[in-house]
Image 1 (cartoon, helix red, strand yellow):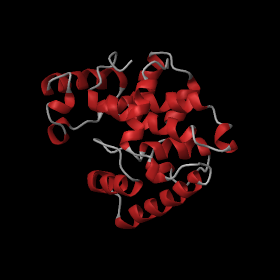
Image 2 (image 1 turned 30 degrees about the vertical axis):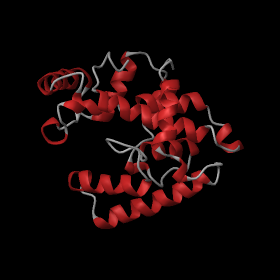
Image 3 (image 1 turned 180 degrees about the horizontal axis):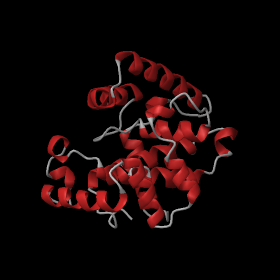
Length: 209
């Protein structure tokens, strides 16, 4: 699937890491967590950012190595093709990509649970897990929630017009959601670390979306 859409390894790695965190969370949950369809969550996380490739600003954020197996020029050319075929908005592109390859509607719906605009508006545990897993992975590595929000503020606050007050509210709300989530888990936030998560990734390679 990733090869079908010619995704750079950096984007593939991000989705694998987010899905692995989701898998780790689900494996350490109480009865509330066990009532959730684990495979649906993991599948959604494996495809949640497919459309990000249409919004990459290659001239600002990417080195040649991060775009492997493609060159910078190849990546820019493919981006134009993908925008023309699936749309210039990353969320729209993700949905259109998933529709093209016949992904179940339920999985497509779950991918829409990710986003700062949804934080605090829906206490559905599936949304909390999906959004939290995504917010524990920075572009290059697995980080704490606080570190990830620092990264979001640095990279996106000017673009999304996120004021200091708005970011403060996001931090407070996500902190509460983190507490809510871990009240249902047998692990702590600090247990989500690179060494643990990287061991899970190979188990995700054979999942059929």
